Amino acid sequence: MRLYIYSFLVSFICLSVNAQRGVRVGYIDMDYILENVGDYNEAKSQLENKVVKWKGEIDALNAEVDLLKNALESEKVLLTKELVEEREEDIYFKEKEVSDYQQKRFGPAGDLVKQKQRLIQPIQDQVFNAVQEIAKNKKYDFILDKSADLVMLYSADRYDISDLVLRIITRSAKRQQLKGKGAKRALENDEDNSLEVDKELQERKAAAEAKLAERERLIEEKRAAREKLRQEKIKEYEDRRNKLLEARKRKRDSILEAKKNSKQ
Image (cartoon, rainbow, N blue to C red; front, top):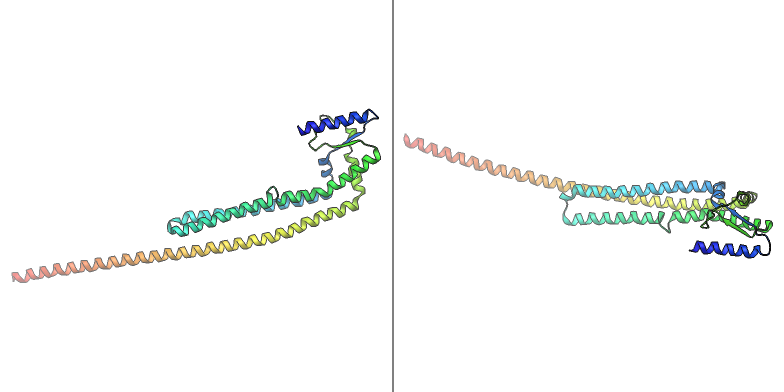
């Protein structure tokens, strides 16, 4: 509905202006312009590398969760109810940590959305300034964006001013370079923050591994203590059994000796 209203308003304005003079309408293709701006592509490549890195960090956190779950599953029979509940609570908090980190990086208000906006904003500003200059100099009444929501069922190439916008942006190379550096600096600052996050993740991972190793050591000690107790009980049983057999043997020998003496 919003699209139809927008199209109707544009058509209405065009007809109104056309009643007085010819209407000059042009359009740009924002996607095409972005693809041909070097700084944008370079920064976009850096962002894509960071996305790969973030996904790797999430995979590593999920691997920690799987490790904790597998350890609990294999050792559950040896643990008390309290220890099982403690391990399940650790797993819950670790899963929540993974979920929170995913939201931080890829959520609706996450780093990916923010950095995409930060990446495209300087280019959008340059395009807007270039469009304003073209519209003023070439006497355009309307300049539309082909890649936006407005549906263009047909558009003649002679009305496409995307290359003209690119030429103006290129002429303003110094301003573009400064803004591009600003975007790069922002990405670099985020990279520094990411390094801090990586360090924190590594520290938490090391702490979790140390805690897991300590638990495994305690479980092994309990297992060894139980085995020792079992062996002691077996030995105690064997000693009692041997003593009982020895006593029975002495009693039997005593009876046989008594019978032998009575016959004599």
